[in-house]
Length: 482
Image 1: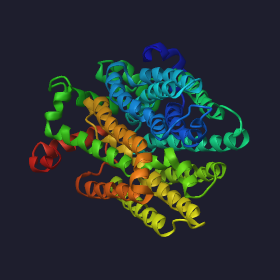
Image 2: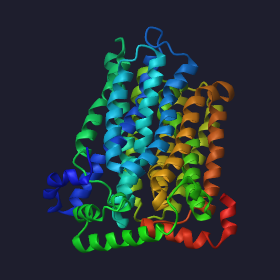
Image 3: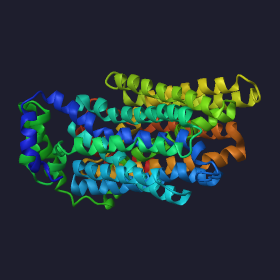
Image 4: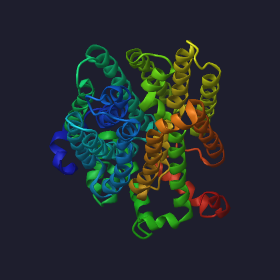
């Protein structure tokens, strides 16, 4: 699990092959972390009803919320720590360590004898989820050519929703076949050990990020990696650009959190924080974590709700695939605005429909239709771009720390939605809860329209240079954020 030089012999044969094929291998293997991310967040959707039974973990409304949201609280800390450690130790090595945590924490959850132990291991599992949510997009962004960066980075989002979809499918199958068996929820959780093992063995043969290597002065190793993933002339040119950028960065003091005092740095970080946070506060994870319960409360039985919830997972996967196909054709701002407008409209529709059709036999089918529509807008337009924007809108020298801060904020908002959703339902009802989510949707629309710059087609260094040139001079615009 050492640095790139320890993998030279294993990677030499790959270097001779088509760089595009190697990039595909890198993307596929590294995004197994996204698959774990998705499965571990989605599996609670169907396992909670069984886990909550008196003869199992005997969960009440509050402890149920803690079990569901403890992972996201751990993810918040995993995001901030993962960013810092990846800047020090490297992207690839951190992914290897996270794979071990995924496996260890999953087995802890599977064997948990009570709610307390479950919450502890879900928190530890969250550290791995949060770390992967920072490191994998960063790793992919630094490995990919600028013209393919959007598609490569958003492959992680595709793997996340695929993991959630698989969780819903396994939940439905296991819940309907073994629903009357004790500890059925343990069977649902243990499936996640398989991609954890695959992630470790796969990443063990991948190279380190050339940009990280160059930032540590290891130029020969950086060029070796670039030759694996670029044509020779492009590899030399890109290394030169990286060197020039590093030389310019070295004229400034070593990167620390104090750099947030610099207006253009603070502005870049703030965009990632706001976009990521609002994307959570529109309530996506109320559906991803509690979708089965929402459908059950609207009128479906538990086993029927498990099956119906698969539709949510399926549409999420399809929507992400469609969204990925649009990334190189449609501007980032246009896609995000479309997504926020769409989800806001659907949230309002869910709230109004629930008021007008309370007690109606068609209500569960209407709710299912609207949640599917919501997921189509979110996963097709906001989901792929949420992580991509955070990866792109980050100072190169502070990328790990910057993404950690933005993702920490995102996970805290995710945690609050997961923890408070059952309480909000009991206090203000389903309609009031979704109207609250819609209010955050309006904030997202206004912020993206007013503050998000266009980054499609630009290299990471060009994005940073534009921010530096623009916002070091135009202080009035910075003041709106800072």
